[in-house]
Image (cartoon, rainbow, N blue to C red; front, side, top):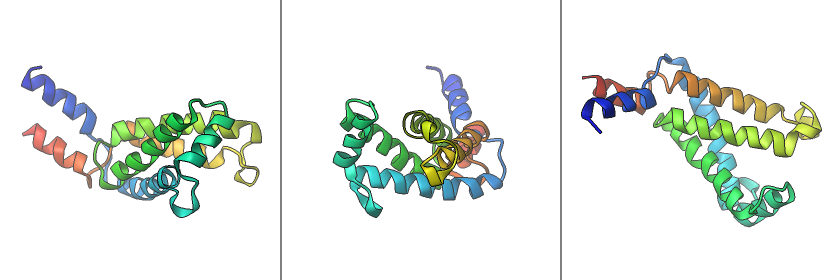
Length: 153
């Protein structure tokens, strides 16, 4: 691959047209995702860890449950960390948006909108935040912005 093509691809991945406001979205959403991923992967914060999450995934018909738990937990944990530091935010946001679509349609849609009934309200808000970051990028205060500026030189 030529240097120009590599730079162009890098610019598309790390480039951002968002301002400073993306930071206000990235940090809390990243913390939420990282914490939920830690519950799934490590049993942190009262979570069930991989074994318990795998059983839950199997009960939803998402099989093999262990692999699905590993994928969902990894997307949430590492994707959340990526949002917090602002590194590779677009790919992380794409993975997180996909994870939220799966969560909405496999676990929450039949329970209605509201969280009080275990509905899809919270997952929908996280989906919207992820799609916003996917479209706008990490914003000015991010590793991505620094990489994009460096690549533009």
